[in-house]
Image 1 (cartoon, chains in turn blue, yellow):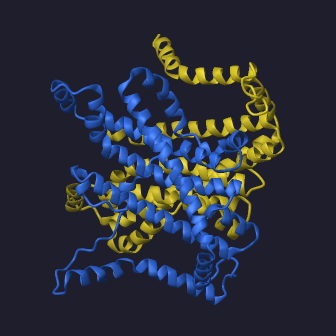
Image 2 (cartoon, rainbow over the protein chains, first blue to last red):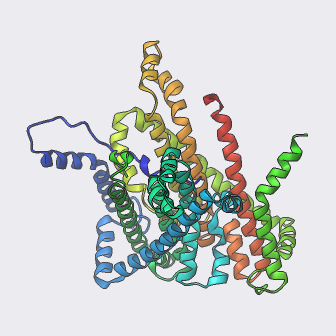
Image 3 (cartoon, each protein chain N blue to C red):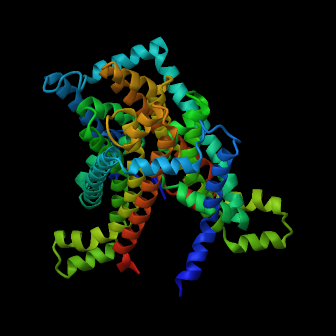
Length: 282
Length: 253
């Protein structure tokens, strides 16, 4: 399945020599060293952009990109664009999460649901659903409704499959003992299956969230209507490369923060589960 | 005579899809929805049939396949090599992992205007976009797989006199393969998304462009047909890839 393995990204964790320095100084020092490649990359960007080997149109200097972001921040364009993109991506993501978990549970527990939806999911997962964008525009118009629908349509698949896998992997002994103790079908769902399947479900959600952002930006580029993707597309049409690069920085920060927040939420929600004791690296 | 029951089972499994297609057809033939919004399946199929006999269709399909194939190939080869190198040589790991961590969560679609800015509307910008967008899932898969190579196997190979290079090729690369191939499957799905959408947004050729062009012209029958063609391409590419990956990993069983 289209899995973007969130748990897998590596991070340099240099083996600490236990020196005499207090812990926070050491970890700060290592932080700087570990992030050195990023700093070097940014410095190299500035140097190349200033040297004149490439035109400012192809690669504007970093300082000018940051100035542009600063002025967009002051004028309010940046918060509006980021807010709109986030609102659409999160709205689509939440719809997909709720429907996807519900459908996954239904499929895992009911043979008819499984029979009906299994082929639809297995055909629908690998197809490039973004190709349906013009059809959705035809049906739902140019505004938020079609964008959010497109985002939910793309993100629901990993949630459904992760939920099914999660429910199937719940240990049979737990289900049997709950049943022996007289748990109702409802109690089984809310108190046994959902919590026990949560680690897998959460992994599905962590796959889905970046897809929501990718598709959110795409729908804005294709259909306009503000947002970070929309403003990047406008900037690109007007040959305003500063605007394009400012947009990249904005959406990169949004993506990074969202992924980190999801990892934190996972650690918090799944504290009881041994798997979340391991450090989540992305 | 095994094919009979297997065929019946397959038919039963995919019956819901047939049911959906029937529903679509009935909805438009009985005018439950306007045919302007949902053309009947039969007219989509017939205009699809007409389209397939035009050179224009094959021209666009060819350029889409070329872009997707080249970008994906570069992503898998370079991304895979980078992941394995990161696991094998610490200096490369220290240099690359913060960069991977920064670029991994970047919504890759944001690169569309940048690649268009650098390389224009043609093939090169799409290939660069797909390469950049699809590389990291392969890198991360290869890195995790290579790092998971059993240390005892590496020690045994070394103590039996294998050079570092031989150990890398004969022990580390095969252990990286399952997760690398898994990452490549993610990359395949991502490549279709980036290809079709970048062609819809900035291109003068390709299947994505054709969808947008037909839609703008109000030729919805043909537009639906091309959307179905793209969906089918994505589906079959995934199935063929799975069969290929299973073959490559046969030694594991």
